[in-house]
Amino acid sequence: MITSYSRQAPCRRRHMSDPSQRPTTDKITVALTEMLPTPSTSHVPFERIYEPAEDSYLLLDTLSSPSEVAFLRHRFRQYPELTNDAGGDRRSPLVVEVGTGSGVVLAFLTAHAGAIFGREDVLTLGTDVNCYACHASQKTVAHAVDGFMSTNDAALPVKSVPGPAKYLDSLLTDLCAPLRSGVTDVLVFNPPYVPTSSLPSLPEIDAKTAVSSSASSASSLKDDSHLLALSYAGGIDGMETTDRLLAELDYLLDQHWGVAYVLLCAQNKPEEVKHRIQHSVFGWVVETVGRSGKAAGWEKLEVLRIWRQDREIVAS
Image 1: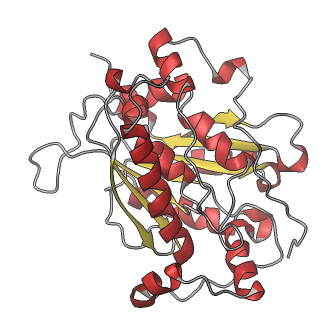
Image 2 (image 1 turned 90 degrees about the vertical axis):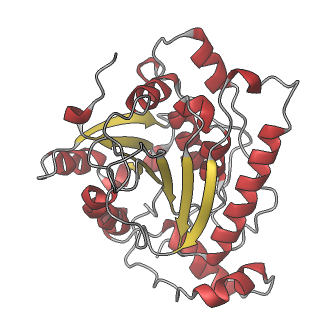
């Protein structure tokens, strides 16, 4: 077990400096995405919930970068084949964050779904094995949406973009266990990626006690340390939990338009992971779409985008 792992949040988000990650796009899109504020997590008890750090902010910067905004808007603009189970009306895109922690990424995607996806009918959902994280995420999302809706004369031109997504809930569950096949359109995962000798045991998931537990302030150092370990301890190569999710992607994602964003660190051997994904039987394409700075040492981070190239929407 790595006990010296530090997770201090930087004072502000770091924006990607690699020109390949910030291609030239229309000026309106660039202006909108660069103005999106980071949700507040001042209410979150960080003694038992992962505190937003460089990995969290890299995800925010990646998902709101002009290149990814262009990709997501193009991919989900028309939805010619995304229909409900009865084959009738088109359904709304569902964005799922696995392992929400404080809820900063989920809240960001919910509050700024209009700017990122260019449409108003986006749905968002979160999951976590930590009941305190689920409770905190609900508050973080609510605060972020309230802040967006009350912004009228500030720098963000709220009247020029669609509004926030419809936030469904934060589910107390392991990965995406309750979700049906093919209902997820965008999956975001900042996994426990630190290599450790073993994985911490999952807590008992009891929906009946989750509400009372999440509202309670009572805790012990041992319990809190275990909950934090769940957020960073990744087992062999830091990949044991991530591999479980990757194995489920074909089941979870919409077969036409589904796309996943997964964060890795250098010790996860990202090039080997990408090769394995690309050569699986599911026809995935994988590309690195976000990187942390070169001064990040062993914890150098990158964000993978995983999707099916042959399902690209043809621009009209």
